[in-house]
Length: 257
Image (tube, rainbow, N blue to C red; front, side, top):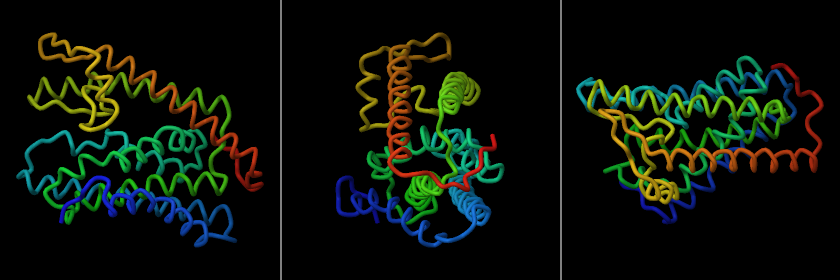
């Protein structure tokens, strides 16, 4: 069974996170803040388990040979741990990062699911992880926002931006380090090249990839992608702030950091 872009199944996939968000809302309606936080912890644990099962399957299929895909540093893989930490610690900075950065990235992975379309079959742990992993990231993050776990202010925006750019710069170094040591370059945060069939290909084609020994870098692509990231996070911040103004936030939401 394969996945086809812009098919009925793809449109159902795009709609699914919002249906799950509604489901979570009604499941936890009337519960206390602490009960909802624990529910979020369990959702995050489920996401991490899905990711682990995916990695185990890849390890078995590749005879346990090293592969950078085992390391959860890709944006959406990393999101599982951002949400887990946020719910365990009730950390408002991590909740803000999940909403402003991981949410749009996961949603784009659903809309532009080109890599899923290239799977020979989606009836594997890897296919299951792609579909339900992204659905749960989007749905859990939106549900957390609705329930008042997310506190958006300029300080949260600054910390989110700083964290993203630090991780982005580190990903360039880690991608090249893995490539130099193993001969197979990682592509965390899509810092070396874009996913095929996504709008980021335009930025990549505008630049040139320079090779300095085994170190590869496309400065124009990195710059334009970094600017786009700033715009997307800023737009998410503005949009959800407006939603907060239109709908009064939950009074029981805590302000721990």
